[in-house]
Length: 156
Image (cartoon, rainbow, N blue to C red):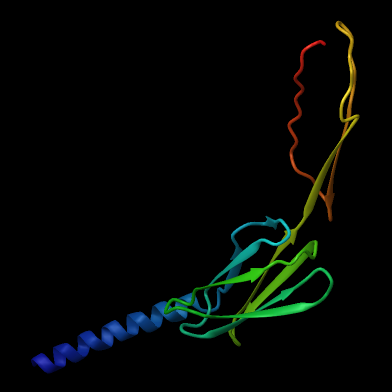
């Protein structure tokens, strides 16, 4: 076999491997965010894989109030992408759908607010006496953070 035939065979083998890898990654599209829950005003980083190589991806973000915002990304050679979405204080669950026209993937994340209320906020306790307090933790839309509570002080 001549040098040209060997070179051609090598090029064809490399091309077939690249095509195989690109096709293998397509059809298993998935998306995810850098966190499951965000605070109001944070930036959401959205990642994707398994999309078509070097393709335009439309990322639709449905807000809790039903409004749909769109952001766009271009995949790399392996079908992956990264884009961002800026939150603006709408609290609740967001649904994200990404598509390249052939493949589609979905994920969700939440934007919550937390509040902690302590009652009473202060108390005078005589030496050797005691007092109690009520701690209320609320979250919107649901759930709540883990709260550590401690007290310090010296008798007056």
